[in-house]
Amino acid sequence: MNKTIIWIGALVVGAVLGLLGLVWLNDVMNFVATIYTRLFQLLAVPTIVMAVITTFATFGSKGSGRIFGRTLIYTLLTTFAAAAVGALLYILIAPGNLPAEAINNSTQTSDISPQTSFYDHILSVIPNNIVKPFLEGNVLSLLLLAFAVGIGLSKLPESENKTVVVKGLLGLQDLLFLLIRGLIWTLPLGIVAFSAQLAAQVSAGVVADSIGKYVLVVLGGNVIQFFIILPLFLLARGLNPIHVLSKMMPAVMMALFTKSSAATLPVTMESAEQRLGVRKEIARFVLPICTTINMNGCAAFILVTSLFVMQNGGTPLTLGTILLWLLISVVSAVGNAGVPMGCYFLTLSLMSGIGAPVAILGIILPIYTIIDMVETAENVWSDSCVCAMTDHDLQ
Image 1 (tube, rainbow, N blue to C red):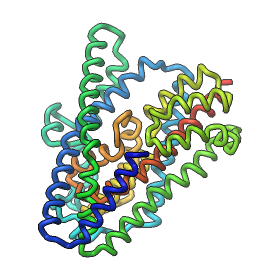
Image 2 (cartoon, rainbow, N blue to C red):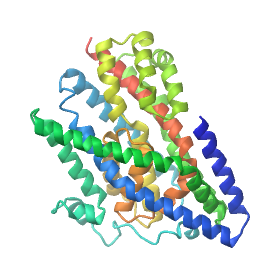
Image 3 (tube, rainbow, N blue to C red):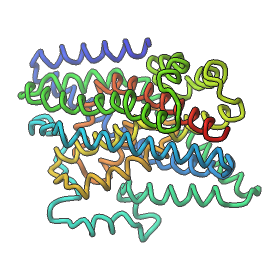
Image 4 (tube, one colour):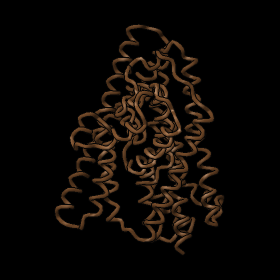
């Protein structure tokens, strides 16, 4: 909660500085914002690749029995539904483009231009050299490699060699998390700079209208998923959604204020076992896995934000493009385990990899803390639903 107050304070300070209209101050804020954008890009790609590899590598050790099978199916179904709701709302609400001044820090355009066929874009994702995707920053190719390596590790028989490889990857992941925590510790300074940039824009009304519709799509999708889609899943399995939500409310409320599914996990397990009556062997198996891979809110955020950024970069949002990125968002969200500000970092790395104007993510950053609160509450509620449905099915 203290961090949220500091971030909101930084947002207000930045807005005031931007409204002063001092040229030298605006130049300083632009410089600081550019530094933070570059640091985000530096850490985002390796962090996401490590997260995907280590997440999928643990599948084998967590078993492939009926409990895990049900958990994975429900996770994929609810995550896909969340992303689909986000895509539908984006088409219906149709956020407009930001003014050119708002994205003048990025002159890049997307690789998916009208001159590039959908067929060529798909081919560009398939790597033919293991080093090339790292050198070019091709995040889609790297995600494909990470997925293959992670699944491959999960299928290897247990041995000393496998243990060494997995522990080495986990060690690298811990190091990257340490660097990210350091960057997040200094993030109020970045929020001041990004907020000042936003406040100093010439066409603030256009920015507010465009960003306002974007936020409406993201939060509206979360609300629909929370109160309509997930209850429908429960009803389809013969469960009362009001009863389940009332029993799991302590976990959902804690997730809202802590913005961390992992930190909420003990409360989620206690609520599921003691209040909802889920069997211990189910709750203690399903919920830790769900905390790792069940990211409904993250999938919706990745999809909607990616579409918004690509649209502003000149990418035509055809039905094929939307469906491709819906699939990418679901797979990315499942592999996006345990990364602080993971949805934001992953979206940044994806957009950077295709050359979209990542400066727009700087405009989104000041309001991300509110989005993150709602998304985390939705993630924990989805975890609770998956756990309840799995327990019901296996009784």
